[in-house]
Image (cartoon, rainbow, N blue to C red):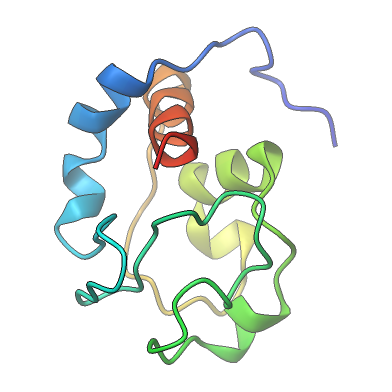
Length: 108
């Protein structure tokens, strides 16, 4: 599916600020595990494989790779994008904030 927000350009600097809500559970420092899996270098990787020390749900292991479109869908509504995910997060409704978070993830 085409990204409805393809015209939205992410800003990694703004994304660092927007990532604060993610940083409660996720680290971008390689090897550091929080409540959620480490997200360093996650973009482009198959879902459920980025952090070998983390016990991913079966739903996450079955999900597609983290393309920009998949990240956008997941950040919009995690439970709709990956039904069965155990991530307790409602999602980021603001398209610009999602784009900024994705830009920040790609920079890390």
